[in-house]
Amino acid sequence: MGKDDIYRKRHISAPRTAGASLRLLTGILENKVTGPLLSGKLLDEAGVSDLRRTESRESYTMRPPWPMKKIRTKPAEAMDPNKLREIPTRKGPVGGGDFSFESSDEFIEAYSDGRLTPEQVAQRVLDASRNLDSMSPPMRIFISQRADDLMAQARESTKRWKEGKPLGPLDGVPVAVKDEVDQKGYPTTVGTSFLGKTPSSKDSFAVARLRSAGALLIGKANMHEIGLGVTGLNPHHGSARNPYDPARATGGSSSGPAAAVAAGLCPVSLGADGGGSIRIPASLCGLVGLKPSFGRVSESGAAPVCWSVAHLGPIGANTRDTAIAYGIMAGTDPEDPNSLGQPNPHLKGIAKGNLKGIKLGVFRPWFEDADREVVEICGAMVDRLQIEGAKVVEVELPELDVMKVVHMLTIVSEMAAAHIQYSEDHKSEYGYDTRLNLNLASHLTAADYIHAQRLRVRICEHFAKALENVDAIVSPATGCAAPLIPADALKTGESNLSLLERIMRFAPAANVTGLPAISFPAGYTKNGMPVGLQAIGGMWQEHLLLRMAWVAESTLMRERPKVHMRLLD
Image (cartoon, rainbow, N blue to C red):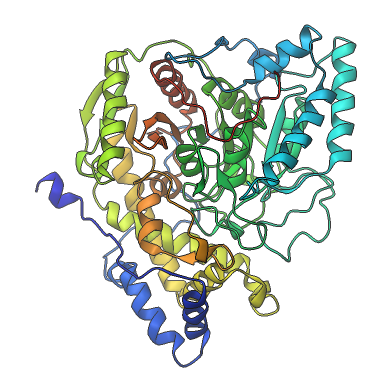
């Protein structure tokens, strides 16, 4: 059997709807008579009927069933924030050109030499945020910002710097937080219009780690409603705009965190990823996005929307900032059982400067199943990684079509379960696209979910076999560059299953398996939109993925977004 026989394309052809047509479709689906008939057809189109006929003899699992050779009996030790300062810095643009994003070490340098204070930077963040929202169209990066809270943080950071006692490599560095994750004093809306009426009483584990390192938490960033979408469209809070072209989508669901970094409001942000929601916006906004191994960063204090595929992780302007934020957040949390049993996180060798001895797996039919320009750009980056010492090895990944449906069924079932308590009283308060998707999920069965989890075991076995011979599997991060934001979807959202599948074609595998994955810039299309290359590594191999991104970064000239603020000039 050839590779083309192993890789079976499932490109959804359901019609796109938005505005009045989406309202009508949602009404038909919610009708007790017509709903079951139409939902069955749509679920068939998504591959559910085929999945039900797929034989499975595997055991049932409630989390990524990745085999661990050694289970630790003592907690993993967090990385020392002060040691993270030892990661080498890069001065000015890399890869040629004259543009570079402002990095955390530049903020630290400005504070160290007394050129600026965190208070001054915090005020510039607030001013820049207002300016971005006064644009036409508004950038809508944040759902909420509290000037009093931010300035209070900045005063404490300024005091520490004056006393020569900074807390770590992010002290006074702006960091945005996705509004899916608790931050003390802020509501957590999860992108809805009705959740988060009461501010959170404490930080999530990840946010607490960032705060303990001195990060300036600059606001709760926008997102696709409840994370159930990959474009970033949000009819309640406005749709976050792509700084490379405000007419285009950021990707989602971590739309605001990616837009905040690309627009220059912060060098790093905290995102969440249940099906590519860190890597997709990182790719479409020209950034580095790391989805760690399942359980590597605690989910404690994150909205429980899709617990068996959920991951928290950083989106950074460059590899170093992404690595620092990851290093601060990674490690054991007694309140999150999934974080227990992990080995100590580390960042050894990420700045080694070459990829000698590293084998990159390519499953060619999968790699090439993207827009032609995306494939060419990603292929060129793989060529550059080979020049830097990597070796490309052909691998096979069977049943990727099954993997897609397993992921879809898993995440929408878990999201529907997470929101079952709101499904009646707040149904009309969701965006129409979210209502439609939650309704479709309600037509799935418990048997569907259990069957998907059994097949999940087999998908993990396929990736385990491929990773026996390579260090990472590479592919485009998305099937296309950032799409235009359609005007008719601004107030309702949209149902565009074909576009959704195209954008997230390569991302869900790492969520189904729990393996770490990264997206880093590979180049730009002819119209200036970013394209990312994805790498999926073995369990707990985040340091290797960051090493790849570090090397790739040195080979690529970064381009300035059309909308970009400078905080240190």
